[in-house]
Length: 407
Image (cartoon, rainbow, N blue to C red; front, side, top):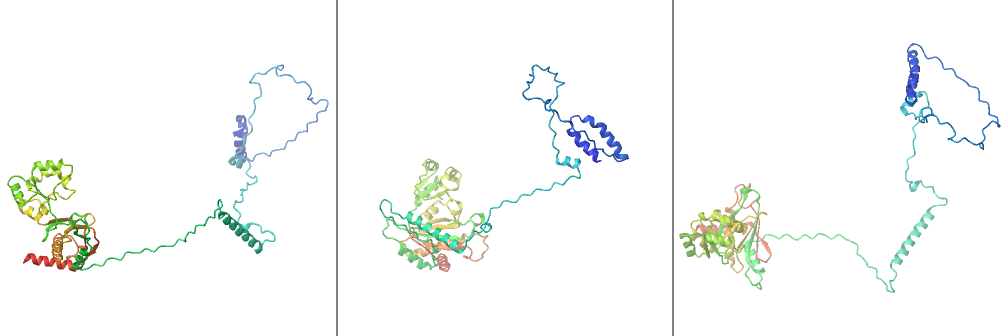
């Protein structure tokens, strides 16, 4: 079988593989019946040396290629290709008992560590100290060179302080005070040098989610002592309703011509409140983009869309305010002027707190009036600091307003 493998490997690189067919048949017929005959070594007689006088001389003239008769191309000796090298798989069939090829391993190249370096003779603690001393002297020379005078002037070295951590100072949280004390502080902080009268503002943080429609907080209230400023009222009505509005003291009264004036006016408005009859609501869609962002669009829930035009105008003139929660769950509203008396401001605040409780959403989890609903109540002037007010004092003011209204 080994002979057949050897023949197969030789036939791949033999120039005439068809000549190996008889030998292949002979080996295949003998491999099944009997072992192959032993191969006898053949020796040849050595070639006798050539006499020096018969050896070809290099000085003898050679015949030119033109003088020789050229042979046809088919009779000329063709150059033979060098024998192909055997692959590793072919080498296994050629000689199975040959020497095994040992794997070659190369040492890994690793950067030498300081511990691996050969220690110099006589190196010790003294040599290390000398190296350190020389390094220190070199650093001192470089520092002295950097501090050398430039153009005859001595340059002072800039001293940079060592960085330190600055502790964060937290502002002390303001403590809630009573409503009466807060009103006194607001009046005391108001600056008399200003050329206008500041407004007393209330900012209420509520515990509701303004993104949910069932927790929207909005409402309207007529303050007992008014807001302290002149309110200009516009009424969209025609016919008898327009006459009633003029008699009640409306500043601007009109119908379709007023709508066209607002639409072509470039956003300029001459009023602070809007009241309309129900029949004008479809027509107001033309100017909804102008009135809506300013909070002037009439709304049936706020009482600004009604057939009782006279009563709505009188309520707006007497200090009716509308409040609505913003996207941060805070209500901002003005409740009077700084020149009001403390009792008047306290009654206005009580009326607003009562209206805020009436507008409380039904879906809140807390059952108490204020817990979970009114989180923080702050009073301030237009340009003054804010003062947090306690919930019990607000509750007392709201209860007092309710008793006055009932009586």
